[in-house]
Image (cartoon, rainbow, N blue to C red; front, side, top):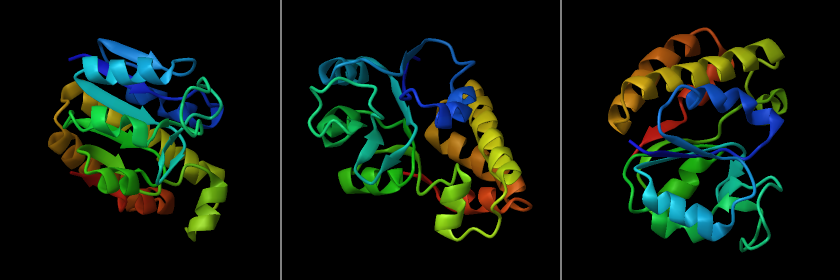
Length: 186
């Protein structure tokens, strides 16, 4: 399976790398691609994984992509919906990806608000504000999702496995509990 991973270069989301680190036949996009190159890559790959910081309007480009993007704040935004709609096994991991997926009727495994920093925990009212809890949640989620993807690429199986495995950490880690409640499959 040819997999396209769009993960804009940003040190604060490096913890996501284990998700795709051990996968075969991966095209990794971190910066510099034009809008047309990204769209063409989406069309020529079997699966698209998108991860990093984002909003309900898409995955932030974090200054890593050329200005040919409309509203260049996003590497994945409304201009990519048509290409993404042709895939049913996408993976969307960014804050409020659920609103983007639902608004555009896309399919795959996706997150809602995903606390990955202490400031986000505070903002979201999560009772634990220590860096160790955030790191444990981030690292466990990324490792477990990477392991799941190594075994299967079927979104329903990924969803079930992550809900079960990450759910164990959610029983003892408030950050993981918050994030666990905001994982979805469509």
